[in-house]
Length: 111
Ligand code: 5GP
Ligand code: ZN
Image (cartoon, rainbow, N blue to C red; front, side, top):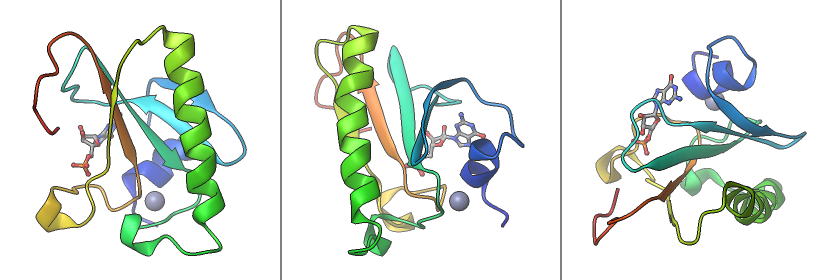
């Protein structure tokens, strides 16, 4: 499949990975919008949050266990989790991903 994040998961495109397990993968964003900015993606291709089903929801729940663990390990005291769902909401890579942003002066900025 011609999907950038599937290729990152498969190791076909290089990335700065910070975590990986059987279900998900976390890597730093190529174009960081904060001092710390990484993405967490399911290893299986789910196009967007709108495509989460009862079958795939456990992977999403798992990601929401992994995020606080990673943030704890990175020593982040506060962070923002963002998901853009659909092109009109700013989703540019059509493989479900959660942005995790942290750093001073995040302010009211949304992404
Ligand atoms: P979206 O706009 O879909 O919510 O976010 C996509 C994010 O993926 C963007 O922040 C963009 O910088 C990041 N991104 C796109 N291509 C790559 C890539 O090849 N490697 C990495 N590490 N990040 C990417
Ligand atoms: Zn994919």
